Image 1 (cartoon, protein in one colour):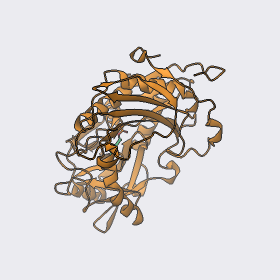
Image 2 (tube, rainbow, N blue to C red; image 1 turned 120 degrees about the vertical axis):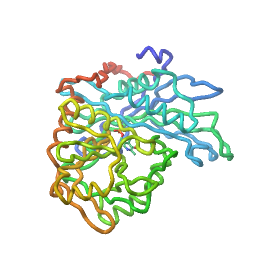
Image 3 (tube, protein in one colour; image 1 turned 90 degrees about the horizontal axis):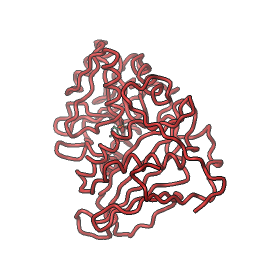
Image 4 (cartoon, rainbow, N blue to C red; image 1 turned 135 degrees about the horizontal axis):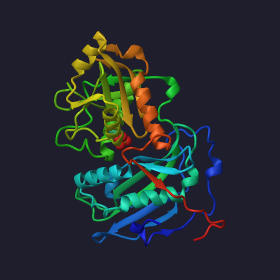
Length: 369
Ligand SMILES: *Cc1c(COP(=O)(O)O)cnc(C)c1O
């Protein structure tokens, strides 16, 4: 057990639901593993950590998170390597981002090390749920939400951290090829000074209507432009975006309106490792469309934990369609996908120490309290 959580109590599920899941039809977020990690914040401090069978949590109808959205979440993955070892990818980065999200939403920070230790413990307990197919993983979903029952808009005094997991396959069907995006000239995701950089529920609720509209028009996702002028590319759905402009790779710089993706950071590092020139800068939608026409935009892709690397084949903007790389996946996206997955599965050298190897707990023959 991680030293951080010496007082962790584990109550195992009497039986596992794992046999009910068809491993050939995992989907994304359709199934949940047997347990959840739970930690409450009361009277000014975080209390007793526990792992219990995953179950509905009772909430007061006045629960502040439900009304005013004081909640934040994270998303990361655990993998079963080709060598059989269990690895979690860069949990320290998620811990750091959760800290930033909490700060912006007036949620008390977790003590140092608790997030990583809690992720490690829940993966250890439910490690048998980690799927083994290429592109599959155990998605880990940490969530912190306000629990006070009150109707005034104010920071809660009570919170709950839950961490549970879901065996997943690729978010987008890789066989389906590149995705098409609708560049939004009407709706925006985030504004300067807002909460765009935080993984907080309200950002996703606000994106539902524009995303639904984009999908109804035949696109896969919305491409978000900046909130002030609708001129600069920000991100796509739940992914950061990259453009290969004739061998120089560009991604929008972080300026508070963009979610600082762990995959984004990993891709930048992998690109620098292979000697590619990378630029974090403002990228105008005009530049993207112009360069898709003159052929100097070689390819584009989204990057995120859920979708890994997702090729972008088409962008629609103000009634016109623009093809990228003939509408299909490009070689750089493929290469980065293989590099990332290779590192995560322990097949390629982990030069930057991204993987956290977890030694699975021996499951007791008899479920015990
Ligand atoms: C989570 C998320 C990302 C990707 O972040 P990763 O850490 O790479 O998973 C990008 N954009 C948004 C809006 C997100 O919520």
